[in-house]
Image 1 (tube, rainbow, N blue to C red):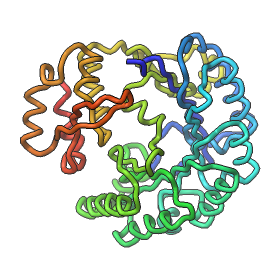
Image 2: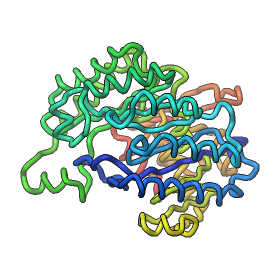
Image 3: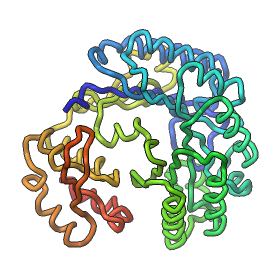
Length: 389
């Protein structure tokens, strides 16, 4: 498949103003000096590994975190300029940066656009200031509005907004109000990511629940919010193209689609993961170690067996509402889907969790697909687990 010569780049920026109470990501506050040293280390790692991308076309670049926008714009833009000199970044590549309200201004946003960043992902989570305070967010709804409209003024025409539901104390009505508030933006976002809050072990939320200070939303309320999100966004013209992601036509996140389609990617920075030629590896988590030797931090390399590649193809690909292609599977593995997973597929077809359908693929051919039904999407983890041996 020609897609195998395409490559994505991910840069982990592990800094934030302060850690949110639900967050288990690899992130922490840091001084401007540490941030600058880290960005220099990122550049050393990326430039030092450029030979791994030889002959590849970079179709997307993603600056994630943490909160990449806490770092000075000149450092982000300078890194991107260096990348263009040694990586084959396509002119039409999707280049995304994650930002939080309260960490960007008009000058920083304009610098991003001038550097070629063409997609913004803004962490909102809720339009209710009380809910934001409970989450430990550093911003208000008003600050989000200021950030959003400053981004539009700077020329961003592709903006994602992150939303979260099943928050402590959240009601169905306040969930609905957040959706309506975001959809009332002029113009409305091109993309919306909508997730249910997960209480991860080791986070302040997890500890507060153990002490009886906070409690998780009842499961039925969580499901009501999930269904309300699907209904409201569909009515507003957003296509649900992945379990938790919705987009207007033409604005699905190309970088994330690459993950779900198992496109090769190189991750740079503390804890960053990579997939290259069916080998998965990641960098160590220690910040000090990374600053000292960014090219010597790789660990946990795993050469995927053929069986593991097939499993990934299914449980990643089925996250997409289009599903996975029967021909694509056969092209990749020289075996048919039915040959490898026939009994599992038939069982889930009978139970109404999977469906067969047809679509035109990127090569213009009509291909039969295996996809989750609406009910299957609701219990996706259960379905996907059946493809693991």
